Image (cartoon, rainbow, N blue to C red):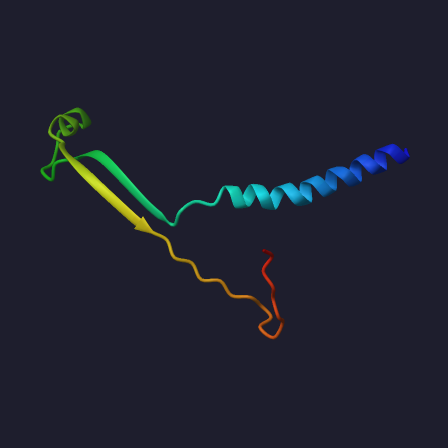
Length: 84
């Protein structure tokens, strides 16, 4: 019974240490750049879906996205320290 308590404590300690490390490793750049070749349906009405697909215009699309985030700590009177 005592051995199982030690194993559980070790498991909790490993999970506590490894989860923040895994989250840190998965951080990605806030910039995204997608290059897509897309087909657009014609503006004129079509008889059926096969007709629309046959007359679709092909275009290349470059989609550039930049993410920006703002964080705020509450309560504001408390002194927060970030781990290094």
